[in-house]
Length: 621
Image (cartoon, rainbow, N blue to C red; front, side, top):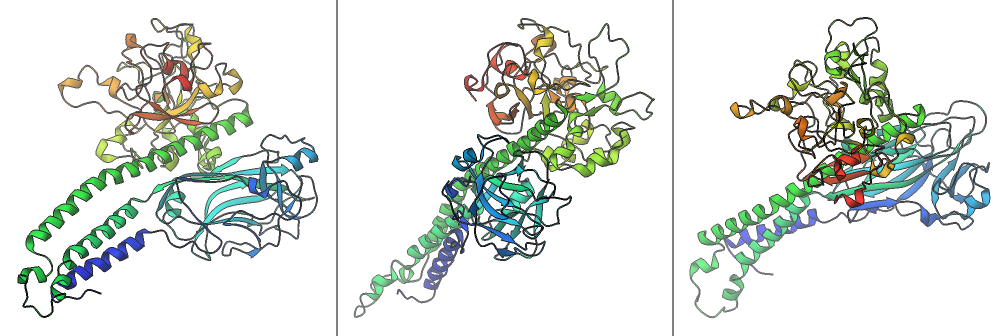
């Protein structure tokens, strides 16, 4: 090994520092029974359980347990055997998933189905409570951006069980954080559970994570226990920026060691000669060398920082899309139970409906300090789906006898799912976000997502109208069809059913990101102030929680997105925005999508039954 006096020890320091940094940056050795996340995503669909009879071998990282509790993983269960939904044998089972089958599917069809799920037949003396499905993984060097898991109700019985989706950290965690809860729906089917952004962040870059679905409280009711299962765990992730930094440090450290050590062995190779090299060559680094190395470090860091920022934005955009997915699923679950989507706004009838179709003023009604009898609330559709997105406490606390201002304490609540992380995590005082709320004294309760009102002339944009709904009969110059054919799924006081969508659920925008605009300062904004003023707040109906996809120059709407017009969608992401379609899928749409007039692709995607052809595949998204 090379040796050297004085400054040469500096080379060894950088060598060990670089080596240590590189080792830290490398993935931790896979723990026994766990999966090290690699690539960009993980999917477990349990197809590996196969249709073979007998005991099944679980996928790597998975196990099933009994005796699980709030402070314990529990005891490993012995076997997982193949079984159909209606079999009475208690235990963990390899069973058919709901994919491609119905509640009435025969046992033969279930047995032959290649779409498998990991299930449980509960009994009073097995897993009630204490049953748990566990996934053990290593996320070192990875930042989780989205995730979901499907829970399957396969055989509805008299007993009803509440399940929790939780995570714990460490080799054998003694505490667990609940991500979501799932109560027995009482009907056959597949509700998904989404992993929220804080939970994803907590599970990121960890050497040992346990993700579990567990029954931690005894079931209620009488009779037999349910058969339920889990399926399709999906995780998406990107490299942690810190990993890239540590790898760079390792490379730099090794480089510095080589620069500091390369000459001393040459001198040592000539023991019988007088020192043939200048003293400076035997003493580590010169000032010039240090300056060169510092310059190299600066250049490399300069190259790395944009990559780090890009990686963080990818994670933020994925999280934003996950928020949209959760909200869209909330709307679809609401529609499944109510046979309609929630009304866009609950507002009072206008004074003269014969002369103005749908000219409601939800913003003014949301701000009333005196609430006359018979007046509705000025509330939004987001309020109606709180129960479907795991905000039952807020939904139950809302006073339906008054308006938004009368529920100020609740309406100011920041709900993380309603904020795009690329824009904000709450109301920004530096951007005067509070001036867009129902009350300028509020400091919470914003939303960055809205529902599609269609390709109508949506809202008045003169200073006397509070952005109230426009007359629904107002035509847009050059637009094909009647104005009533241009509507979206969200309508004031009356949401529509999915059956009303005649243009195809996959080709109809349900939700999307909103612009959040404040007037420009100075004289240049004098003629455009009101067009650049947003309303904000998840509880408020109207343009605060809706957007239009219309292109309407006659009403100063240039069309498209990110266009600085108050009723159009937009985002803080570069080059476009994310949208959820009526089938629940989420897609990125470029801001260069065709919106040249109200018959172009983007406006057509916003309306539900105009009969005009418009598809995502032809939109250039």
